[in-house]
Amino acid sequence: MTPFEIVAVVVSFAGIWLTASRRMLCWPVSLVACALYFKLFLDVRLYADMVLQALFGIAILYGWIAWARGKDDAGEVVVVPLQPLRALLGLAAGAAGAVAIGWFTSHYTDAALPWMDAGLSSFSLVAQYWTARRHAESWLLWIGVDTLYVGMFLVKGLALTAGLYAAMIVLAVIGYRQWRRASIDAGRTGAADPVV
Image 1 (cartoon, helix red, strand yellow):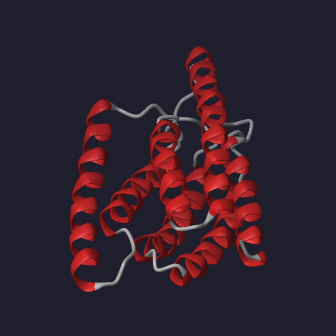
Image 2: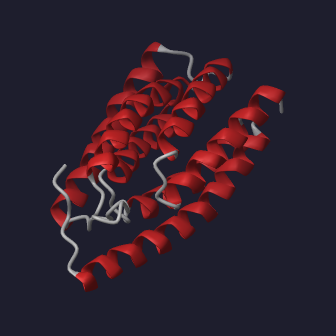
């Protein structure tokens, strides 16, 4: 555990809490967290997760724009249901990405846990995209991914980061409940999904 990891954990936790609360500040805070974890993962040779942080940076910019356009008249970020076909396509893309990244990192790098790192990275991108698209179901995918991340980080000796991911599971449960409630409330009031 280093001071750098402690800062990365605190900033990441703040970003996730803000996301679960559907606050726009989540995007710049999460962007800083990505930069910090990019460096941390480089140091411990989790290359797929390092690249994931760069991709998260791009997804965060997209999410920031999507959320800014996805507000109702009261200024609240609108939660949008995930259609079954889109869910299947997202999961298929995650699986394909896991195979491609895993094959590459296992053949061309000295990655510590290439297949697990690749799978978690790929499905994290799917979850991040679903978060940007304001789907409550993104939190369910985060719960699964973060559970596996806890084990991987313990194996790599990143106990504080494993603790962060354990806390992120709790935040994901809270986020899912809040977003689900917001989706149900929007359905009752007939709020339309803003075009994004």
